[in-house]
Image (cartoon, rainbow, N blue to C red; front, side):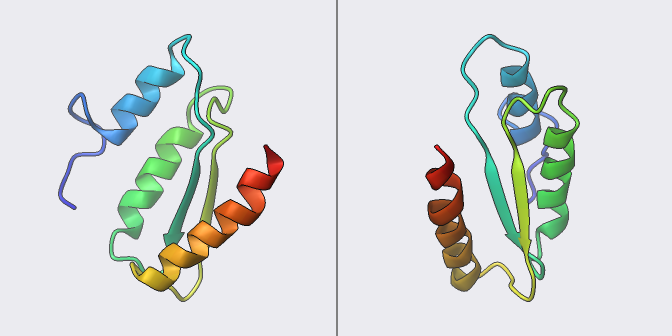
Length: 90
């Protein structure tokens, strides 16, 4: 939406940076987005900010689905990938 990804104490980037600097356990992050998603640029901004954190504290993975937008089809593809690949590595 229209939220600020960097500003404010509840912004995604701010929270990721804050947790990365703490001694708390960090979750592994898998992030998927459709190539045609109207908010692709915001997803890429989050991706770039997390990838800039030293030491890859989240074992971050980003995957872009070609030909898909902000749809249920894309969400299903993301979830299938996550369940098949990411959870299997645990």
